[in-house]
Length: 330
Image (cartoon, rainbow, N blue to C red; front, side):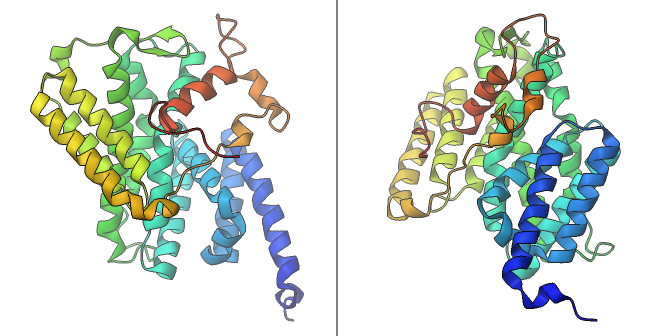
């Protein structure tokens, strides 16, 4: 018997959109590991049933919110939740590559949002009283790093979702994501004694502890991932952080060279400004009326002013740092 929905594509799209919107709401809320597992399983089944093309078409601008939620779940302390979230990302990236022959657009979304997600995870740990030092911040995003390493290790020989030509692209993508997480930690370290997570001062290591570091390489790697034609603001953001890092070490020649790269980025980007992509805000992380559970964030904190508003403000500074980005449009 034929599927009656196949003759009514408009109704089918409405149904798919309703299913995906519901799943996104469930995944964005704090749940037990079992609930997240079931919701992720349903999401993965929907992706496979409806296909990547329809999934991308239906989600539209909400695709970036799916990326936020997936990255958050990839940082889950539950191995089972982290594994199935990673599995979803591999299926999504593999499907997009099969259809379009590249993952450039979705990679731009992931790399733009990963600083916000990492900063939000740190802030949530902060309002829970679990962050006292830089080591605590590094620990708070360890599960996400492990999940990215699992994606990089996806082998086309035993995973038919990964095309042999996609494998090296995934390696570059995952290394850039790791470098983005490094970048957040570097920006916090550059604050020195002024570094605080939602009002809680963070104990810093001495500068000598980072003498043999790879901070410059990480910042340059994530900056180079963004092209002036499609991600000029993101590229500028990381180049300016690299410039600040050089200045903090007294490397004035390198700082000047980095400013030259910034100027070149602006020059190259001007003809393509209409193609530049900027993220929107995720209302399910911000609007207490749509997500009643947001009022519980920081409820048990010893500080009265530690809540979701402070978490959002902190994360926003890493999504689009003030002084680099103009306020987003409506």
